[in-house]
Amino acid sequence: MKYGAIEAGGTKFICAVSNEKLEILERISIPTTTPNKTMDSVFKFFDKYKLEAIGVGSFGPIDVNKKSKTYGYITTTPKLAWTNYNFVGYLKDRYNIPIGWTTDVNAAALGEFENGAAMDVQSCVYLTIGTGIGGGAVINGQLLKGYSHPEMGHILVRMYPNDIRKGVCPYHNDCLEGMASGFAIEERWGKKAYELKDNEEVWKMEAFYIAQAVMTYTLILSPERIILGGGVMKQLKLFPLIRKELKQLMGEYVSMPSLDEYIVSPGLGDNSAIIGCLLLAQKTS
Ligand code: ADP
Ligand code: ZN
Image (cartoon, rainbow, N blue to C red; front, side, top):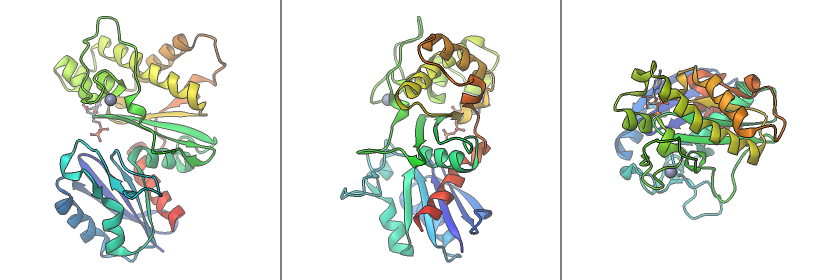
């Protein structure tokens, strides 16, 4: 028995095939260009196998509402070639097998929940701070969704004293993604985020924004663990700064678990989402 997985990101697609124990047998990385070109390579990869199901974790926004006419579509993405792309439909037409469908960050949350840093608890939030910011959650063992999926990167944040007032989110300007994504850091400071590693002000400011987000998720969802991943969080010095900032923001208002255990790095490294997609395939089959 074999499962397929697609982690569909804005810059690359990672595809993998696993056995029934979810051990990866083969994986590839395909650049995200046009749907035709990218999906041709995806099909070429999966055509070699007889799969039970495929799990997809996609960049978004996507339609996850099973009652909707456009269920399985990538919807209003700024990546114009992919706007209103019927992702699940094309996969179903080709393989006629069950297709699991969620956001890339929900898939990562699921991977971490089942096999990673949140294996020992019943709920978690996964936030990626990369080129953009996105988050997913597993609550009581279920991926969190309602009329749609969460968009945790676009919550509003308080401004850092004397920060520039123009963020990079084309929709909201100064939302979390607008102020604290890797792209925002690069626009504000005129250098790549990893080139700024010795500039303390950069990371103090970054922690100020991320701690606000962590506070909001904590107050609304009360998850048992918050996992912070993505390229920007490779700056591990952010973790203690975020914990300190969060403590100050929360005051003594609600009791918190040990912050060292509450705010952690992904247990699966860069594989949270692809493992989550395999789990999704298994659950869907
Ligand atoms: P993406 O979000 O594009 O899928 P990543 O999660 O790798 O990819 O995030 C890319 C962002 O992370 C870029 O803004 C990059 O500058 C930043 N980044 C990558 N590595 C580091 C690092 N070691 N320290 C700080 N920022 C980093
Ligand atoms: Zn926004």
